[in-house]
Length: 111
Image (cartoon, rainbow, N blue to C red; front, side, top):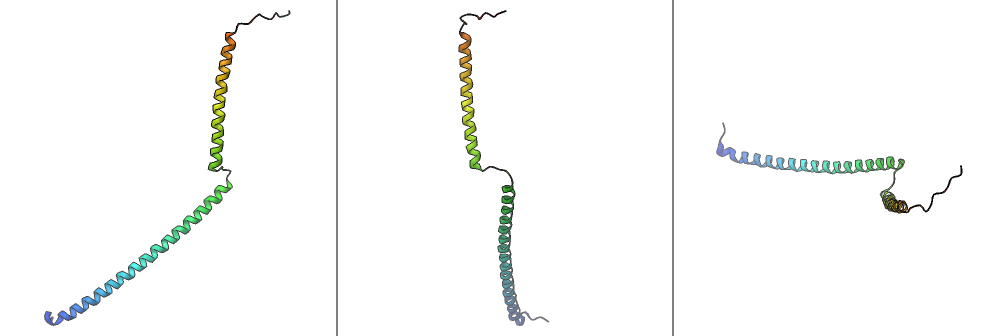
């Protein structure tokens, strides 16, 4: 039969041992989880590095231009477009001026 007064020290000692075991178990689990997270971070970095290498290898095999080259060609195209529009306006002005000038005389055709 249980005697609460006599069993109290035994129960307290058992609780204390269980709490120590519980704390050690939790500490061990936390260390394992921390190690696993560290390993996963390392794996993630390794996967990212390999993917980056693969993408660079694939892209280097393609005939692509760099951003700087693209910007240079884009600026050249914008300049050429502005020049073309300026020349088109100039041609229109010259055609309008030419249409206002009356011919001095008609050339006679031989026939």
